[in-house]
Image (tube, rainbow, N blue to C red; front, side, top):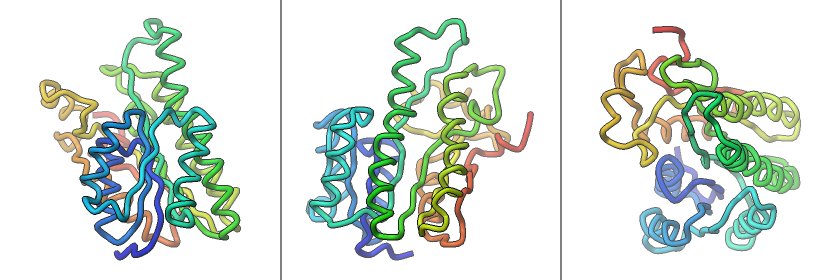
Length: 247
């Protein structure tokens, strides 16, 4: 599908799923604004997204900070004039036993997975309401969020990414009559910089299909949801079968 002239804001856009989504959307004609914590990483990512620089902008900083979130949305408006799509891709995973989590773990995962989502989404939605249209895609999780794994305890993933799955449905209903769609992609374990190559064989076995997911699998799901105008409130599981049940 051609996304010519559309404007997308993508959090977590300096690497992994966020960067790959930005590359794909620009390839299909969109303009993108990416965010991340490291300015240097964003500079390098922006070169990959669009070597000409004409269709990409970036904002560095912690999106749980209201001022950074404001700058991100403001950059999209000042550079490209509007916001059609928000992809909430920023997130972290910390897997350990519940009693081993520290206060720092709790604050970090809540800040990135929840506070960042809240600050950016609220501001993007405000602009979408003015336009009478828009689409939000939340990158959540399947294993650990909806289908708990005994071998990989991760209650803070269930708390945060599972919460985003619920928030996706809530927002979809709240804004369906305002021309705004809200969906989520719930990945399995994807080959991104979050996971070292040494763990791939083990992580592959956490999926009924017997392999890890590729970044392109998630990008394809984002593109589908972006084009699926009759779909809202959907949690699209791209997880190698994890959500189907025990294995």
